[in-house]
Amino acid sequence: MNQLKKWAGIIWILLGPVAIYYLIKTALRQTAAHPSLDTKIQWGVFVVVFIPIAIGLMIFGYYAWKGEYEKE
Picture 1: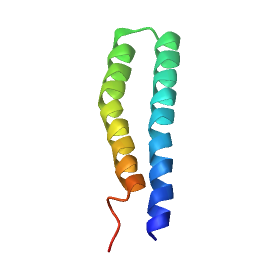
Picture 2 (picture 1 turned 120 degrees about the horizontal axis):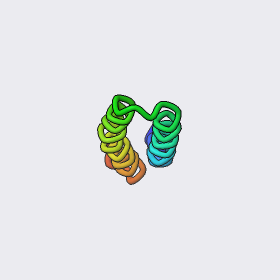
Picture 3 (picture 1 turned 90 degrees about the vertical axis):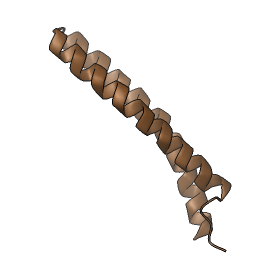
Picture 4 (picture 1 turned 90 degrees about the horizontal axis):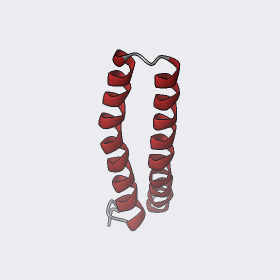
């Protein structure tokens, strides 16, 4: 089970930057398609809120990879 936690940690570490990339890519595409102020504010809030969540996901994955959640 501890080995599974380490592999899951690597997945979480890799998932964070991928999620941020696709979020920013989608935000730029949507603001270009609908250049109103409402759309820009909406996607700006989405990006500002989600980036710390994705960073926390990467930190959680790092600790899982290092074995901080292993039971002895």
